[in-house]
Image (cartoon, rainbow, N blue to C red; front, side):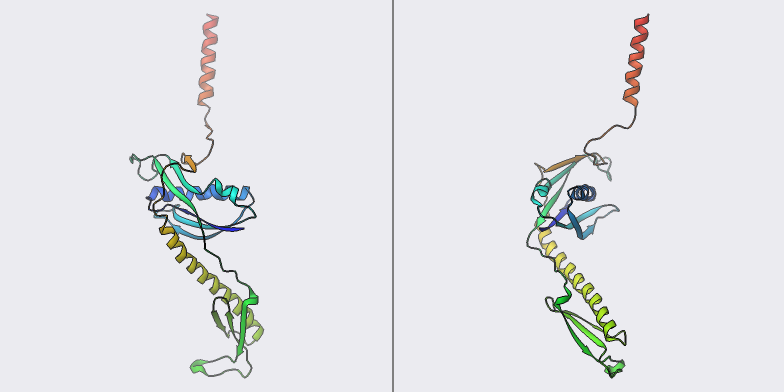
Length: 232
């Protein structure tokens, strides 16, 4: 099973872009813990370093439904702005959505059609008597490349496969970005209230543990004080 998931700040401010980056880290950690393979298809950087406006992932596993039940919806982060210290707002919302109907084009060498011809020089003149140049066409997408780098037809064929794959995948990403933009427009207004998850604190840790021993020292001081009073 494969699903495309988008984590987006919608029209949210810089703080929401920061939350997207933090949530992405938690999301990927849980995906790894659940043995879910993932691939980051597209990311739109935020307005500041270490922030993201949106990120789209391709998840691969037999059963994703249980995992996604705990993620799909609005996500709330409660805390003071990391960019505007005096800002009164304390709740920041982002969204996690499934992008339905978007398919990733798979590249298969069996779908390539090859044509050989003589290499051409300047002005279109044939420079070889032997057909060493190769034109490779990816039939499903219609993308094609022409390679005449080498005097060996076999080498040109190998190069054409590499370049054609890059071209097909590049076009695939462009198409995905266009479709994702249309879908993203539907989620510009991230729903607030009743979030599927809530985070707090700048470290995004579920259970915060105080690292200092201040509390323990105070307890010991009080116990020592009480002990001295008892002696008196």
